[in-house]
Length: 502
Ligand code: NAD
Image 1 (cartoon, helix red, strand yellow):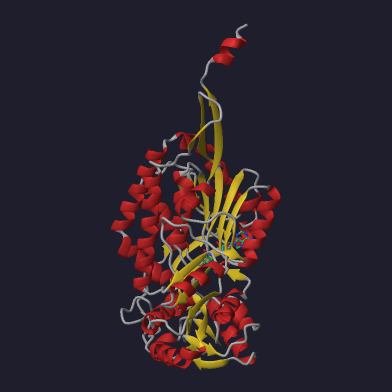
Image 2: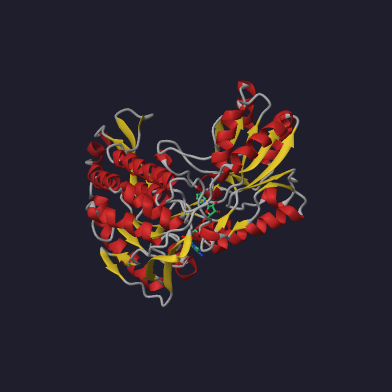
């Protein structure tokens, strides 16, 4: 248990970044960023953007597009690489800001910084590889090849849970491909967004290429998708908003990718290395306070090891120290805000009412140093009915639902009995079962003997079913989303030209 810091840091007055200038938003609504570990601490304030600001940002982006498109991909890559270097220099400081603004513990914030920087580096390198393919033609002296060209002005809409890595994994491929960006981060994390944009500015990104609009989604969300000059939308967030974005963008016939919620299962089989599985389940369920789209929120145990594994899990969960993420001894931070805390507590009540067996946790922490933060205990429910809301719905908090099975087919059926399909884990020494699981599970990502969380720059990231629609993110796929392919048929026989002369 920790006491939240009482010293009051200076409040940053933030601005929008439109056409290379830092300006106030036009909305009368003020956005206030506070520390979830101590909501008395105000980190930043700003005047929110409204539709008019978005339109100005689109004007600026449209104006900047021809020159940015004409900038060679290697030259664009050098600006991205400079941004990555500047980020490396400021990694520690930005991680601390992330902990204060979003609440995740410092080692997790440092991990997110490292991941985001690596993603920018990877896409910077793609500036030297951004190309199409050549193929042999059916016709002699004909060259068949493809080009990849930018789309134009694109909207990037991001959630609060990864305030650096998610913007990085969308903005970097959009920029390297030659697009101009309107970046709309979640209003809970404006300070991190401003720092990221400042770094791109310092790295030499021309005015108008990257624009930042900060404020409530309700005040400007639709215009970011509806405006005729917006050529694509890359969204990560809830299913509710994602479906709306997809519907509006789909009706316009533009490219839309939506990465949405998850309810990710981890299966621990009777032959699993239980210590390994324990570490993975703990990280997956309670890392980042369960506020990851890839969090382990369903645990499916083979009944032969269920009792033993749950005992181990309870011992380990009791060791979690909840508190302010800047305290080195703390291992789980607060919920991001009051609303997410309420959601966590509501689902805990739902679980109890549905007859699930509460094994540990279940309460808000309010005593002493917890008084002004959004702290909840890590919570585990056993005997959860797979038809129940607790099993089916995303909580987005440190709440783990457990069910037991006796045979493999049932484990796969339970894993797949979900509207979501982002990621999953299977712990077993049996290669045949692991491969069957990989083939039969409905998920965009499969972890064998590793936690449900994580992704790497060079491989695609994303989900199926309710977890994702559109192109995968990261890797080549992330860049493909932000480009159109053009197929070129080049006939160099010269005969037709010669024959045309007569
Ligand atoms: P959210 O949907 O509330 O908000 C996401 C973004 O959309 C924010 O920037 C918000 O301001 C904006 N927005 C709000 N209304 C809008 C509108 N009408 N039009 C356009 N944009 C609008 O999500 P959140 O609470 O910030 O994030 C949590 C959710 O994100 C969880 O469901 C989580 O699973 C999901 N998530 C998914 C992934 C993934 O890769 N699959 C990664 C991280 C988070």
